Structure formats: structure tokens, C-alpha cells
Amino acid sequence: MTGATGSAGCAPDGDAVRIRPATADDHAAIAGLQGTSFPDRWSLDSVRRIATLAGAVVLLAEREADGRPVGYLIGQVVTDEAEVHSLAVAATARRRGIGRRLLTAFEATVAGLGAGSVVLEVASDDPVATTLYESAGYEVVARRPGYYRIGRPQPVDAEVRRRSFR
Ligand SMILES: CC(C)(COP(=O)(O)OP(=O)(O)OC[C@H]1O[C@@H](n2cnc3c(N)ncnc32)[C@H](O)[C@@H]1OP(=O)(O)O)[C@@H](O)C(=O)NCCC(=O)NCCS
Image 1 (cartoon, rainbow, N blue to C red):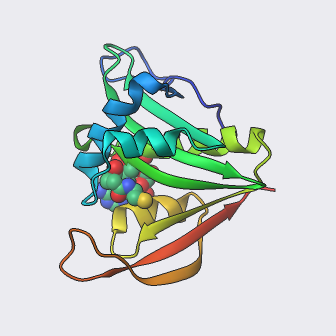
Image 2 (cartoon, protein in one colour):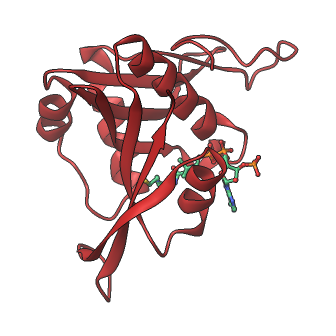
């Protein structure tokens, strides 16, 4: 696992991305990325609320060259388990390993805070996200029928996935 910060580690290029803990100044950018990535758009107030819950861990991926935000992960540690509430990468920056890096950085952060596992929900009809989580070791532990409804012609099941790391 890597830490919650760090750069891509490749040769300097205009597309290098670093991951760091988000601050309140990043909430608007996170709301923007969330709104263009999911059908159920969160308001800035919603982002603020969830990002300031007890145990919240919020990471931002930004371009090293100009600080432009290209991804985020909002999660939370609750007792000895952590939960991913939302993960997204800007459409123009996908498939370059940023989503996986955000997830790995989150796991390292929450492990350091005492969590022994991470749980998340993912739409069962989303092959990109389910492939990401499957390949990262997240196993399906439950299914919530018809959980996703907003912005969809038909309700879609949620897979509840968990990865234990101790
Ligand atoms: C899911 C998401 C965060 C992935 O971010 P990303 O930076 O593109 O992902 P990565 O480049 O780190 O890819 C990690 C793995 O995901 C899978 N993956 C990513 N894009 C994929 C695609 N288009 N098709 C199939 N698998 C894909 C692959 O397993 C990939 O690993 P690999 O490159 O070694 O094959 C991004 O697509 C996104 O923001 N989607 C919209 C929001 C969303 O669905 N969030 C997750 C919901 S819980």
C-alpha cells in the first residue's frame, strides 16, 4: 500500500497526478466532479456535510502541473471498518490508474486509523467499477435489490463489497 499522498512516480510530464488529503477549499471541485460522474448529483452542501462527518477521509487527485482536480474519494472510518461513499475520476483522466491509486491511498489511510476492512456499494450493472473493485480484492458480501433508482430507466441492484486487510 502507498500513503495518502504521492505522485505518479513516472518521468515528469504534464499529466502527472498527485493524491493528497482534500481541504474545505476542494469541496466545490469535488461536487463538480461528482455531478459529472453520477446521475444522482450531490449539492455543495451535501459534499460539505459528508466530508465533515466524524471519521471522514477525503482524498483529492490533482494534476501536478497546474493543480487541476481530476478525481476524489470520499470515505469514512466507523469503528474498525471504513466505507467508501464516493469515488470518481474526471472523464478526461480515466483509465490511467488514478481511481486505483485513490482507492489504495484510502486503504492505507484508514488502515493507519485502525480500520481492518473497507466496505462499499457499487451498481451491479457498472462493469468498470465492479472490475476495479474485484481486481482490488473486494468480494461481494451482500446484494441490495433495486437500490439505485435516480436517473435510471430501471432500478439497479447494489453489490455490497468488502475487503479485509488484516
Ligand atoms: C470507476 C472509476 C473511478 C475508475 O477510475 P479510473 O481512474 O479510470 O480507473 P483506473 O485507471 O485506476 O483503472 C483501475 C481498474 O478499473 C478497471 N477499469 C477502469 N476503466 C475500465 C474500463 N473502461 N473498462 C473496463 N475496466 C476498467 C480495470 O480493472 C482497471 O485496471 P487495469 O487498468 O489494470 O486494467 C471511473 O471510471 C469513474 O469515475 N467512473 C464514474 C463514477 C463511478 O462509477 N465511480 C465508482 C462507483 S462506486
